[in-house]
Image (cartoon, rainbow, N blue to C red; front, top):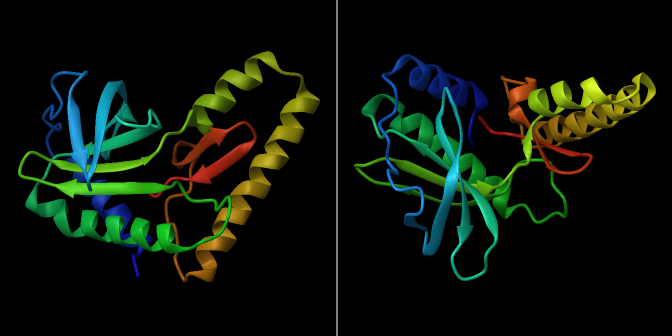
Length: 185
């Protein structure tokens, strides 16, 4: 079973390593991951873990996120643990589970590519924008809904004997309105 402490160690290693080289230089390029061809739409964001690109499945148009990390020896074991964790979660057949959906991965000399469900934004960004425009009562109700979803996600992980270890607004992503998911790292 994947261990979130190992994933946190991976994030720290990536954050301390040099800036990730640009693996996708042409934003309209295509990439094949686990037998699926994705067309890269555009760059989304960068974090301690690498870069995130918005992409779509070429033959269906389904929107996904592609997480790209530099393939360095110091993070390979941690990345394998993250991918194994995502594969385990993918095999759990329940509707609407609270962890971001894994679509596939690919490890090459150029980089490590992980395809996953596309999120609208993280909770930090959403909350910052929402609290500026909304009434206090609406903010409070929405906050309670988010807390319920996060607790549901933590209970889900606890049943799998997994400790997240890095709960923060940037690791909680919004996929659909009023639905939050835990980001694995």
